[in-house]
Length: 276
Image (spheres, rainbow, N blue to C red):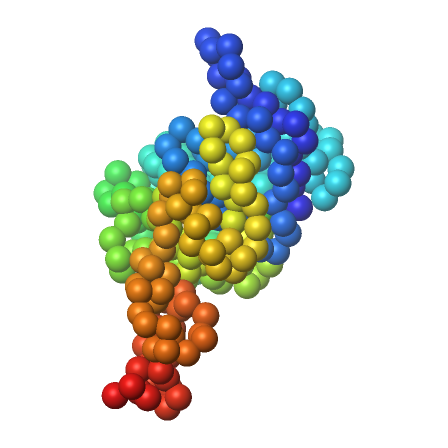
């Protein structure tokens, strides 16, 4: 969907590029970007969203360069790590409408999309609430809603579960599942390896501004040495699974979620049942 061709970016006041990228974002997938702090994850997202201009190289959308920044913004949406850096209006409804107004849509279309977005994200009761009355977790939901009101084909998320408690995280991930099912390609930068393991279809690893690993998630996580070599660690469930004696695992793939784990032991042929 989106490709980086020799893309470098140098921050003002510095002499060395912070990223040097040759990679692609696959269409229709849920891609996770992994890497240590300072590896270039956020910079990659800002370049992908058209908020930063390449110092060198170029990006293509489905094999072609976009003709204008307006085209770019219509197709790619970005949810910032800190929602307070993204929300600009006084109330929830006004903030969601802000981007729609910038697209110069007809008034009737703005009202239609606003109403649909408030419904999709269960924000009707908050529509006229001042944004400063919301928690950071609630602001994150509003920020996501404001981006999705623009109907992007590619949604970028920078550390999207930051500030969220368990319940808010699960609700947020359910929203992402719905968005993906409706046809939007998703890219998430995260430090949460357990989330990446359970959620991703595709993995891209950055180290010091360069892509050092890119692979389908199943292939990437099939060998825990990959994460260890990059000092990213391994997912908790993966480590727990391979700590079990081999007969107990019964040649099953490691579970991605607690629900998967529980389902293994509830099946009659589960290794642990045979042992007991």
